[in-house]
Length: 514
Image: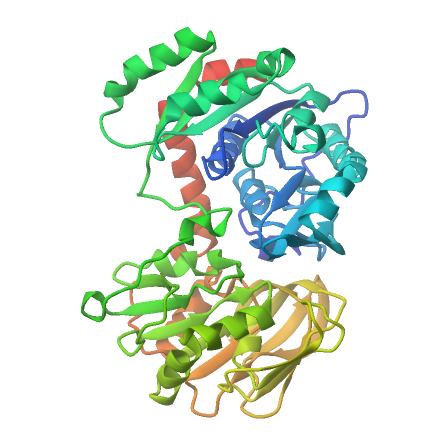
């Protein structure tokens, strides 16, 4: 099972040995804010320690992201921890991310507990409730500590949100529970790195400040030697070491945790579109946007995320991505004028692909009789594919093995609802779900072959599937080979580790976990 899902993972996890008499040491990577690079640092540390023969595992008590994935046993967790598990050559398990919050509105989230949907909470409701989940997170951490030698704990957002600190179960409170030294990560690219560090320390009490072992400065651009005085100032002012300054990288690619990296994509002028080019519609509740990372690795192929409505005729293909709130995003497409642009592109013969929520959006109607996504009702779809969707519980979470025109692929499904095809043709033949053999179909292909939809995420992690789709939309595929699949991801973890080792004082970091 694990072999075909994670070809670079150690055989099973049979290298692990339970040792109930010894608990793994922990190291926490916390941040001065959101999107400062905590996930990248944890991913790098996992591969660096793995390369030293250390049995290391990632852990994040609570993650907030619509970018999720499915474990080999069919449970849902944040993709950031899946990436970190891959960097440690482990198959992911929900103990690595016991609590996942999936935002559905500006003030509400679906809570996924130990891989399964628990409930829908407003921000205030969850804030008042989450201390009750702390024991669950601690138990997950305890199990990991019994099975591995080192646990790398990732924090969330800023570790110094003073108004939330009493109920913060992810950052310093969890580090204290694990008796973990803390590396504080700051982002120099956004400016104010000295204030980020000094301000964070100023917001902490004496015991919390003592737990901060030192700092990593992330995303440096330019001549790194020019920051030597800055390092000295930080060390002199705080009496704590800077473990390293990590330069910006562009020669390899690691999946981003949050859609903040595509928060405000610019409108692309028609004359600036370089072909071949693919447009991904940046809907407000986009999920699993990393589905398209493999496409962006292809030399000569341009992938654009578009938020503002524009003419699409110059694009070789258009993709409607996953959505955490299908009916809300569908309404947004009509209100903004995007629906007209997409339907015009479709009528002019432009190739369209819908994935998960995007697949539902391409259909004729989306029914929500029980108010899964809010107020019960029916939404009119884009009417591009002859399918109709009903949003019903329970949530489907599967690792899926499928074939397309005889080509075998693997991916995963995360969705509420069932979609009935009322025309066209099925897209994929499904052979296995969560390790169990099945004989079923997935998706829809229009009769003219221009439009297709599927529930399967991770399509483009399969080089042959990606090549087949690009051929379908008439994009040259000669440069695609096996290095564009899992092998590319694993190679990038190695490049990240080398980049990290080059610029960090690993001896000092290793001292923290001994």
